[in-house]
Amino acid sequence: MAKKKSNNFDKLVLNENIYIYQKLSTAFYPKRTIDGLFRVIKNEKDNQGCTKLDSEINKDGVSENGKPYKFSGLVLKYITKAQFVSEYIKNWEEQKLAYFFLIDFGNYIIITKKNVSGLNDFIHSLEPLPYELITTFLYNSQTLLEKFSMDNLESSSTAMKARSVESDSLLESFNYVGANSYMLNFLRVNNDNDRYTISANTSRLAKSGEKTIIVKFIDWAAHMINLAENFQRKETPLDVFARPYDYSKERDNLTPIALTILFSRILDDLDKGIITDVRYQYKDYPVRPLTLTKRLKGVSQLLSLEPDSEPYSYRVDGADKSLFKDLRIRMNEKSIRVSSFRLKNIKIYRIDDTNATLVDYINNRNTFFVNFNESEFSYANRKLFKNSMLLGSIDQFLTVFIPDALINQVNTEKGAVTATSTGFEQDTSFHYAEKRFADSDFLVLDDLGEEWADHIRIKGSEIGFILSKADTSTFSATAFTEIIGQAQKNMGSLNAMDSQINRKKDGWKKAYSKDNVVTKIPRLRKGASIDDFADRFIKLKTEPNSRKAIYLNINFISKTLLTNHLSKLKNNIDFPERKQAIQILWQISSLIASGREHDAGIYILCKP
Image (cartoon, rainbow, N blue to C red; front, side, top):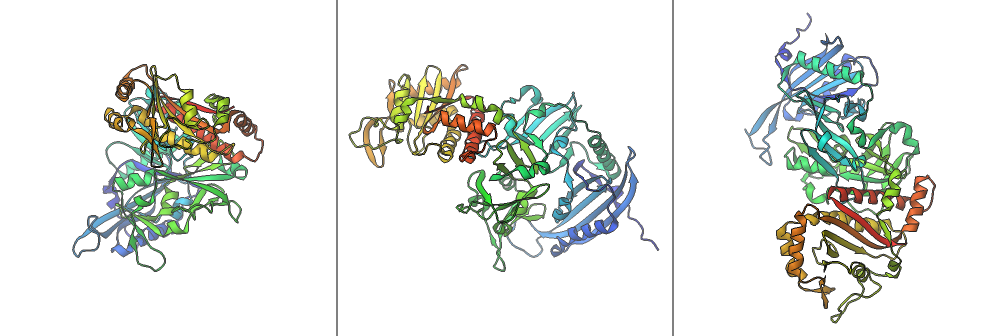
């Protein structure tokens, strides 16, 4: 006798929240494939007393718009310890349900799930919707763009890594200047009060609204697939963001030079309680808890790459000593994957009772990007992006460099000081800065333990931060990266709170000291008094026509040499300093973008 089909699924209601993938074949999955997938899902929870409540495999149907499909579903019941206890307590278990539904339309797969893991191998056999498709196929001339979340493709460790903006209409209010260095990660659109959230990095699409029965859910999913199938490329406001390119076609022309691991998503998941536990286990040694936040320095980790022993494989530079020192990347045919023996031993547990190794989390959430020797390209979210304006903006970038022959005399940053010193030696960056900005209304030496800049200048309606750095090299990406990082880190203090400015007054009133030597150098280098300086600073911050500026004072870059190197980059000419030139170009782009974020002008004083 044939097994009677359950009608329990007809009683379910679901949110219109799906993962949408393309299949490599248009054929429906056979029953054995779905049956094997269900076994994997159940086996993941077998140590939690898991039992199957109901299942359906390859139930035939036709959607409202005439699309044939096969529906499969699995519902499980399992037991887990309460989230608020550290170890098992008898009778303190929680009973939970998990579900997994798959609609196979032949060329597309729709998945919706809850409390389910073990899908990595299956998902990797599918293709997410192309970036340019998933971000724009719901857009029309009447669409309101309500929210963007963006990831920055700049490699600078202090660049703004992510931005989130929200408005009733971002088309009218969003400042698109500099958007070419960002890729869209998440957006919300409003089509005649139907709101959709789109996650480009996970191929997830959700419609806000009430839950619906299975048959209506399938009809909605079929409608989304119909829109995707009939999508025709059109110009949209989203075109200003970094553009995706065909990674498979470009793979053989790319040489990775740097890997950036982003921590923002994992930190968000920790803050929101989505990640409930992190544990470390090496071989057969006892499992021990791990406080991951103490291991993550900053919101990202920049790692230099060098060729590995195998083709298309690159490893982290052997000098790296971080948690990620054994990371490798593999340039597969269709995507780049990260691997690490160390990170496989770190397991992340989520509130939905799923878990993953840290390296799987990095890969599945796409929390990394790769920079290449081909300067305008970056890889992120399983896509290759091209900052088409990077090389084309070189002439504009070079305008921020101001050559000065006097900088040829600078040999050191601060020089030697004594208890009787009243100023800095003539071959120092500090002496040059004070001479260069001698026309300031106020000039304060801010080189303290918690400085915002080396000097702070006020001239008319301008507040300027002056950062000085000297180096013995003639073209140093490392030294440039360091001073760029300082500038980006402290740029926000151009709008410091009044209380912060007032708290610094006592320090500014003291004589300058270096290496425990208290000198006779007053920190007020120009101006009536520190109190007047602080009052003027506070007043200018809020004046509508005031200006803000960042001045970098460096002796290790010549504008002529930099122009020559960047011209070679633009014309794709190979030269020994190419890697450093690429890093400097990205740093310049990053600094200018940060200046736009803070409404600050950028000026770099350098050798001719």
